[in-house]
Image 1 (tube, rainbow, N blue to C red):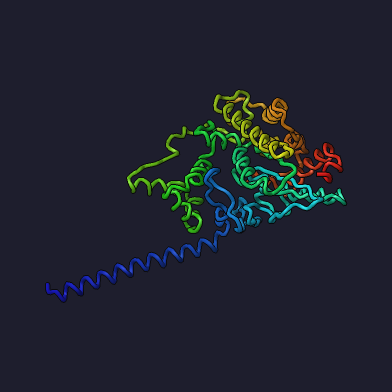
Image 2: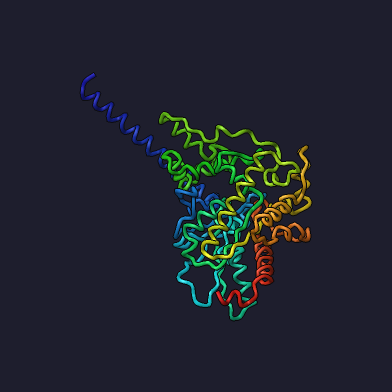
Amino acid sequence: MTKKRKKRNIYSISLKAIALVASVVFFVVLLEIGVRLLFPDLLQSRPCYQYHPTRYWTLRPNSSVTSYFRGPDGRIDWDFTLSVSEQGLRDRTYGPKEPNEFRILLLGDSMVLGRGVHESKTIPKRLESLFAEHYDELVVSVINGGISMYCPWQSRDLFNEIGPSLEPDMVILGVFTGNDVMDTLSRHGMQQMAYRPGFYSQYTLLRNQRQWNYFIEYQMRRHWQTLNACTRFLGRPEEGVVARALGFLAGHADDPLSTLLPSADRNPLIELDLACWYPELQTGYDYMWQDIKGLKKDCDAHHIDFHVFAMPPAEIVYDTMWHAATERTEKRYERGKIARLMSETAQELSISWIPVIEALLNIDQKQWLYIPHDGHLNEEGCLFVAEELFEWLSAHYPDHQFSER
C-alpha cells in the first residue's frame, strides 16, 4: 500500500471517528433537552446546595430553583420556588437590628425550611405574620434557618457560624423525629437498623464532595438531568455509584456504603416508637440531645433565649398510616413514645420545651397537615405549627418582654 493510500485511509478513519463522536454528542444533547422538557421536576433543589467543610453541605448563597411534585398519576401537582439570600438562608437579607425589633432564629431541617410550600407559607414566615397580626406596636422578625437533612449538630454549627451576626433574641430548634436520630448516627459512623438506602446514598454524596470523584458526580447530577432521570425511573445508577466507579478506575475502591448492614423490613420513620430500643437507637438519641445541650450552651453564652419543639412523621399522626406502617412487622410499637421521651428529656436537662408534637398527635383525623406522597408539612401544617408556637410564646412572654429587648 502506498503512502498516499495509507494517508487517505487514516484521514478517512479520522473523519469517521469525528462523525461518530459528533453523533454521540448530538444524541446526548438532544436527549438532555427532551428530558428537561418532559421531566422538569427532575430539576430539584440540588443546585441550591454546596459543600461545607464542617457540616458537609449548606444552602448556596444567591441561588434559586423551582422544584416540582408529581402525583401518583405522573402529573405535576404543584411546584415551589426555593430562593436563597446572600446570607445563605431561605429568607430575606438581614442587616443591623432595629431598636424596636425582636428577632427569632428558627433552626431545623426541611420541615422548618418549608420544602413543598412557598416562602410566605413556611413555619417561620407564618409565625412572623401571626405576631404582626396580633401586636400593633411590636416588630418581630422570624428568620428561617432551616436546611434540608440537617439534624441538631448541623443546626448548632450553622448558629455558631452566622447566628450571632443575625442578632437573634431567641433561638428555637425544630427536631423531626422521623430521621434526626438516624442522621446523628451517620455522623458517628453508626446506623439505624431500619433505614432507606436512598438516604445513605444521598448523604454519602453530599458529605464527600471534597473528594474529587464525588465532586465530579455531584456536578454531573447538578447539570446532567438525563443521569437523574435514569436514577429515578430505572433505579440506576444510584447516587454515589459514579463516584465509586471513578475511584475504582483510579486505583482506590472507596465505598463508604460497603459497611452498611441490610435494612430491617420496617418503616424507618417510626423507629423511635419501637417499644424496645436497641443500643444504637439509644446511643443516637443521647448524641442528639448532647448536640441540643451544646446549642443551648452556645445561646446562653450570647444571652439568647433557647427553646425546642419536635414534629412527627405523618405515619405517627394518622391512624390509617400508623396501622399500615406497623401491620407488616412483628416488632411491638408504643405510639407516641418519642413525644413522651422528648418532653421528659428536655425537662431533665432543664431545656425549654414547646409541646408542638403533642398538639400534632391530638389533631382531628380529618385535618390533613402533610403533603401527600411526600411527608413534609403542607401549608395548613406549617400554619398549625406556627400557631402552636405563637400561642406558647404569647403565654410565656408578656408583651413588654418582646419590646424591651
